Image (cartoon, rainbow, N blue to C red):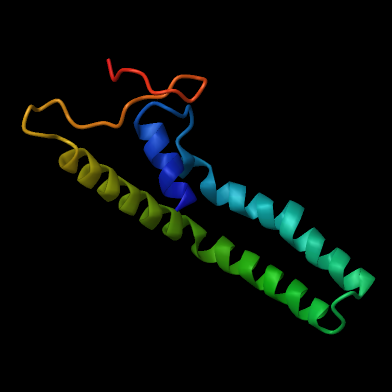
Length: 115
């Protein structure tokens, strides 16, 4: 879901970077610099007992699986995001051809014009 939101934002010009280009590497980094170190710390402090070993093992296994399958998963997520974007664009055009949008909000969160 978050990937799709990021991809749609990029496609609509609301984000500078295409998430499809960096998502795979970003997830590897997330495992290497956050998930696995956290699982190691939980194991070291022993707060979850023998389950801590399992958490670390699962984290490493998930990282390995992402390394093997992640690029294809990103391709599939990109395909689905493009489909959603096409459906959204088709469904938002009204009889006037201008499209129906919710009123924009200014920086104070107040409704403004769509123009």
